[in-house]
Image (cartoon, rainbow, N blue to C red; front, side, top):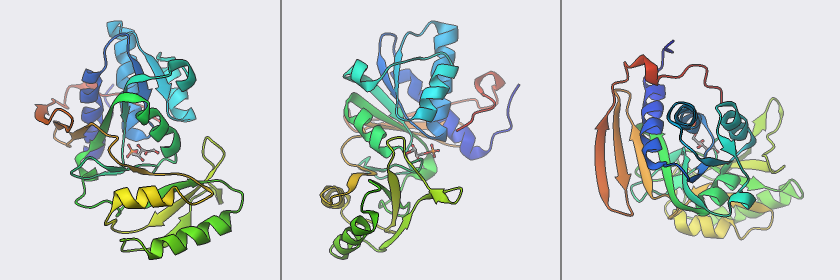
Length: 262
Ligand code: 5RP
């Protein structure tokens, strides 16, 4: 049965489907978090069930681990894997240099560890995630609960010297309570509007005691697979300097999953 998908969901689906081309039997695969990554996990699960694909998956969150097991992917820990062939994950923003803001789902700490432990990081996104300058999407910081007000003050002072347009800091909440990450930490969302120097900001933020990791992914992503609502997908590989356009027939109901829960 086919689901009625919005153009954005179709874009996410075709990007996820195309990215599975990078996965081969025998690989250890980092499995990202979020709605686009959920499509990718579903696609890989289908390949495991129907095509005999043999992979081991390292999930970047507890919810991705549950989904991966549900669709039949063998799940192992990063400790067991030690190193991965490829990680496929979503993003909140990407720029022309394929630098990213991630962490909209609060999983950027594990996502960055897993992506950095991979030969290749493939980002899957609907094409609206492409930006001229990072920062319109609030930058997530994972911070330890101990001394949170002190940490927040230090971040505010640090931002005064940074090339950013906004400086509001908001603690992420869920159901009236602080959002808690899989690692038991809190998230501060930095509303910076525009980040002039993402590389500098990423280095400086991580120097503040109490900050565990920020959501800027600098020089980590190798390939962006960007989907459009009409089924067009572009694949940009900055390591090999290639650009490819693929057209999907999104009316093919057999390719559309239903009941994706993120
Ligand atoms: C989770 C992430 C996600 O990859 C990012 O938020 C994109 O999510 P979606 O695919 O649902 O738009 O970084 O921490």
